[in-house]
Image (cartoon, rainbow, N blue to C red):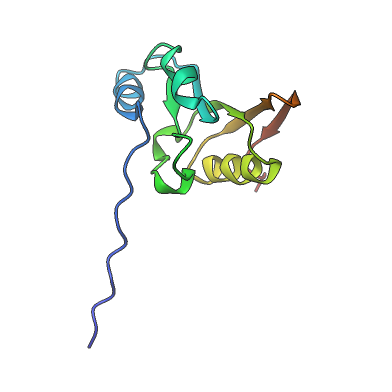
Length: 121
């Protein structure tokens, strides 16, 4: 008999501890997730606990985004393909976000705003 391999536990995204602590205190949050080029610089400019970051050198799937459960989130992504933004936003909704407003842009692109939310059941 073989024992099924245990799924590796994903780590929390940067700044998640502050978000989770504020949620536990029932603090009202306005969380922005920064991803893509300059994500660290943009995230560090936003006050905690109102920020999360997906480091540009890592995939969003490397993190446990359950900290967004029950929240409306702004996803700010710079210089990434539309498919990346769609996949990341869908992943956040699947992780429990009630609404994801994706704001995308870059040096060569005009800003674009797209809304993602769970399907009605």
